[in-house]
Image (cartoon, one colour):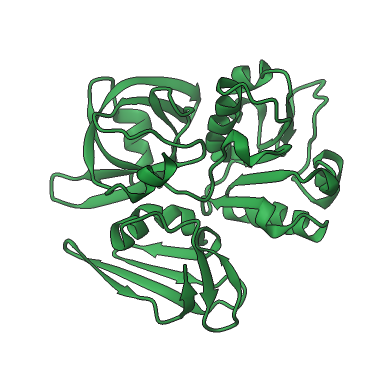
Length: 247
Length: 81
């Protein structure tokens, strides 16, 4: 099935916005009705294309937030100097049209057969494809143990917090709040470094599988630390967003 | 501008090669480093996209979009796939 999906021609199509939900002050989840969707894998993304009245075209990639089989949703963080995200988070309404193509990507994907235990490392909105993986695990009845380490500047900026706090058995969620912590905060308070990873990461002997997603500097740091501590590079899958903040 | 990685140009690569390329292996023509396309460093300045080796910074691939055509330069690669 995956092979069929991969050989499929990737064409632009017009989807309709079904709903826009507020996640945090700057983050929205946009649920889409996509007429021609062949199904996706957890961890994949799609491309959005906006065309201005003057013909100017801007394209951006967004991770798919929903699990395979669920309505297609993307979660978008507003970047103040962005060309695309402010339109998606501030202007878009249910019933609007949105041009997209997807699903895209065969590398940063997880299927239950890939095993684990899973170590999921999120920097800011890098949590989005990892949420799809967590939901996919639950929907497929997989018992693979999951540990999510989520780095955010503040608690208010944590996306999917309620859902993550109620995660299924076998899913452990750890936060590190790097800029501001609420009174009585018992979680981590520093940037993810080698020492923090040593506390959180599964022992190498358990053959863990790592998915790290976030700003480039975050992903570079955590993946290099893990490989230095003995994780095989091919078991550390990475996706880098660039310079966007939030960790 | 900070680099993203090969995942971000999965759509462009699919457009050019007709299939997903992010999980495909690449070998740098400069230093011989071997890694999946998803792990390459990507500098996307529309209309051009430059893909570099994260190990030695060699330019591996360049894509330039002109109207509906994509011009492709793969000369920096020793192997792809």
